[in-house]
Image (cartoon, rainbow, N blue to C red):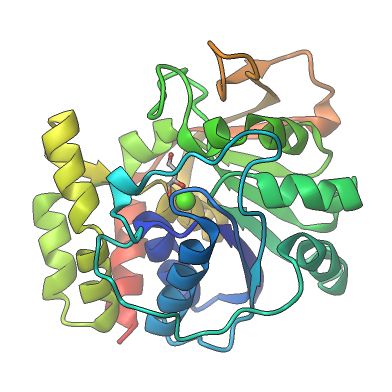
Length: 309
Ligand code: RIB
Ligand code: CA
């Protein structure tokens, strides 16, 4: 059984990723940590509670983390995911109360408690991970694997020309994470756009599954579908966090990858850019996912939405 710790800024795609992790027969979510990103921290925490409630795992502890980047003001993405981050479904107060321990100390503690066996999946800005690394610089060596949704290794960004949102929001935190020793995989925006597209028909199929998870996934993606059509002229939207979860659970979905260093842009022009570099020692390299199997991802996602009722 793979033990998962998921750090999330709980927008619509994070929520579907949480459902997929909860539904996977070979995985167990042992903790969720929340961070400000798509929405302010309180909303991200509430959304994590609703996602775990819909997934039927209301006993998973939620640890609240950082309410903004290390040194920059918070930039949210409510225009993409809705004011509440979940497609303006406005579910109301969280059905799960958070723990009192800070996410950063929880990450440090849980890594040790699970004795190097847990997998850490980061689905938002990397602020919590950076603070946890300040406490324990070897943190990522105490997880078996850290899978990061973030970055744009092909320099095709979503929040700026060359930067992806999670890295752009807190580039200083991301730089600390990519420089840290430990097995890391970066699932970037390139993978979301090439292997995790959801068409209007596929979104409708979510609701037609007749399950609570299918209806939830359909409803929370209402705003992102409209945003992509109206603002980007796209007849689909991408699900970056779910494919990061899918790859963490089944690495065979990856069809092409490369181990290399990642340098993060910190200046104004290149803020949040993720530059592949050979100038990083192998021990601190990150596996960049270049290509993944779209059909395998879709099959895993729909199997999860079908399973949770
Ligand atoms: O750029 C996509 C990422 O930013 C996803 O994790 C999405 O949820 C937002 O956090
Ligand atoms: Ca996210």
